[in-house]
Image (cartoon, rainbow, N blue to C red):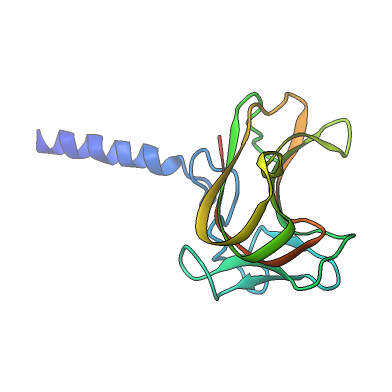
Length: 186
């Protein structure tokens, strides 16, 4: 009897562990969500900023364990955004709803603010038009401690080839923002 219970437990644990692929939680599309893997730029994450943007991996602030993504700008830039982003082009959850869940910390964020984006790129074009943005609810500005922000995309359209997540520092913005524990769940 004991052996049978142990066998059932082993099978259940094996099934649960097989749900994980490349360190990604079931239902989680982003890799390196806690931005701990990688050196100067965290694995899987890309960055872009204007000449004066400081877009870097920070060890000054974090939710888990010791690193976060940072964007800082002291003088507003009317022409350029700064942003961290990640693409997902395999295993697209067509027809499902998505939730982008991000922990954000702000220090003296003024101007247009911060925008969190889920964007779907159609197979027939290079444009992102299946999207959801936090800016539609209002910009993220001010000084605040770690806060969870969510963005929901009601449905991934059938003709989406790739998804992207953008953690965007909008033009005309100043201050410092940190991002950590970034999840795209379906």
